[in-house]
Image (cartoon, rainbow, N blue to C red; front, top):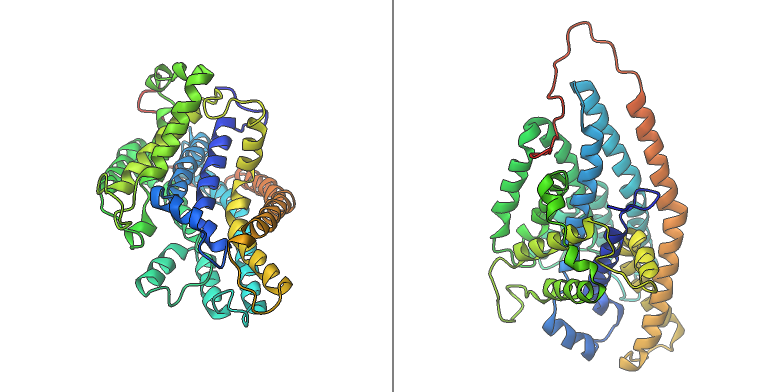
Length: 404
């Protein structure tokens, strides 16, 4: 596996770019006040909600590798929990500042545009902000949809971030409880969810963790002999890798929702999406240019992938700002239709990329480095001296099932 100098797995970054692009397609109708016929036809064939599940699988894999490498070899409860708390510190610095900033911006926009009809009320968006602060946005949005969005604001993507944070709060605790049996526990959790019938929207839709669990299990699997033996070397042929990866992505977005009115392939659609997602992460985990090999395209994919978190947060607020810009530019009473699409799209595209770059450089990256430093200082502090013998934990609580 060839990593970049900063430890980044380039194929995973490219896969992040694919995931965020799929997710953006799922929300493009939010950009226009009218219903573009081209997009409507596209949605009759594809379901782009699968981009979030691909993000879940990527996140489970990347975060688990980082966490378990850090916790490996801990021999007592003090060093274990120092490692776990250091992990939580890094998560807070990595995720929360950008998340809270853009949710606050959405609330401010709802106040500024309250008389335009472009957004939900400030009170509804403030309820979303409160849910984001408390890391319960997934439960909030499940309740919103159960009540026909009566209490929902304008931006719903934060539900997935809350679900991830809940998972990563619980993961170190489960690692401590189950120790070497953790893979079996996570496998059981994933298996119980794979075959569930989960319509969108429903409560189960907002608490799905099968893709995350599968990503974590893949991180375990990379430590085994079997993983190295299953390396898909046939994908080293560039003319074979491209169509196979493209086909997997098309399959990912072709699976219909059970309530979409399209032919139902299987009732456990979401579970099948999780399996296809982790298969793509498996291919990307070898970092052998299996996902994107073209020299001209790879830098673009890496740029988008490295900024995918900022893009994920900002693409919807940028749509609101775009609609507001054209609302104030055009004369009152203007009927927006298909002839405005390129103008709307161009303004939104520039705003999204520009704001994402600013967020990445000025907030996300500096605070990520700060979080690493704070976590390192915390973890390297001298442990308090215990008067009695400390309880010894397994020599390596995260040793692979086949250490080989």
